[in-house]
Amino acid sequence: MGEVTGRGRNWILALQHVLVMYSGAVVVPLVVAGGLHLSRADAAFMVSADLFCCGLATILQSWGPCGLGIRRPVVMAATFASASPMIAIGSDPARGLAYVFGGHLVAGIAGLLLAPLIGRLLRFFPPLVTGAVIASIGLTLLGVAVQWAAGGAAAPDYAAPVHLGLAGLVLVFILSVMRYGRGFVAHIGVLLGLVVGVAAASLVGAMDWSGLANAPWLAGIAPFHFGRPRFDLWSSLTMCIVLCIVFVESTGMFLALGEIVGRPVNDRDLIRGLRVDAVGSLLGGIFNAFPDTSYSQNIGLVSLTGVRSRKICIGAGVILAALGLMPRLSLLVAAIPPSVLGGAGLVMFGLVTAHGIRVLGRVDFHTRPHNLLIVAVSLGLAMVPVVSAHFFDHMPAALTPLLHSGIVLATVAAVVLNAWFNGPQREA
Image 1 (cartoon, rainbow, N blue to C red):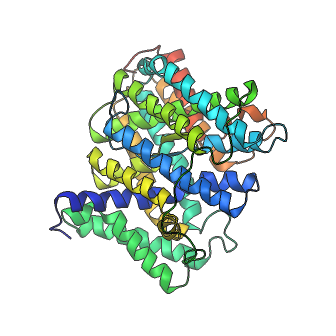
Image 2: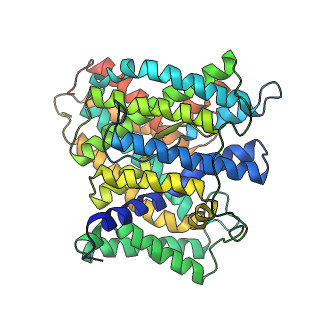
Image 3: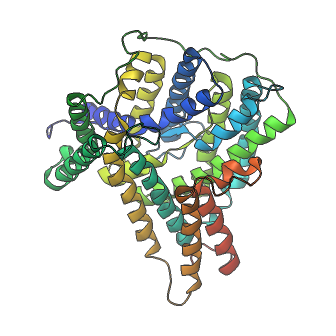
């Protein structure tokens, strides 16, 4: 393995990104399909369409052609902020999925028009805000990793010894590779850990191979699978709000990624990146998928492996799009147990938090003690949806996408409090 070079090395690293991202990438379509009580065939189509669109958006974001993309190692995936609004619109007898995807199209067009305006707000994101946002990303994702390690939140044998054992095995193996591995082997420690975890899961019967034998090898993604898109004001405004939330999420992710790879994101980069978010919403409207955002798990993987090449993520985008066209391979990757992913997630997401703390090390906390208050409140709000999923249950349903995202809460709080205490400046 230490002698692998060139294209083979890049494709192995790209596969590592896909394996780590895949589980989260299919969660949103499965949640929406379940909430709308769709048939197994329609649910499978949603998963395939989502993977296909995620792959296209990832290629655009990392490659950066025609004024699109931030040209950094980014992996795109469906945002969780879209799940509840899509279920609300889709389950409305007066509307349905046709209005959901019509809203995607309207939001995509509006996003392309608004991206330059949003991109010029970068001065509101000094190291104080950026560090708090990065730390909040890691902290909120650690909750996801813990759920994975226990077998998944819906597992009937949640936190059973077999799940904790698999997660612990993967964690220890990754740490061992990072400690004793050299060269290329050290870069693919997460991938090797997943391979070991899958092997162990197979031995203990934790792999779910159901449906694999009957799945076709190749299937196309037909546009407008659920019918011609329809439009109304409420559905369109709802999806525009979701895209605004995606813009907030992506801004934090882009800034974090720029810091990690040593290529800080400027105003022009941010505008290019947000345009791809808007294009992702358009693709979702056409292929009946979901709005995409920069995937936060990618930041943890980049931090862990030290990989800085956007070619890796372009390759990951190609693999994701191909998986969307090959249902049998999609099911094969989906068979990886959450507990195996949890062992890797504990390392990756913890590293994101640590990097946020490192960025905050550049902030002046001595002559400006109120900066501590800004960080404290921002991180505190980020943890609210993590520690209490029902905290905002009595708030208006329209605010659900905002209030149930710890990353969005932390970002809004950090930006507003920094502007209040320090003013819109690049250093705080």
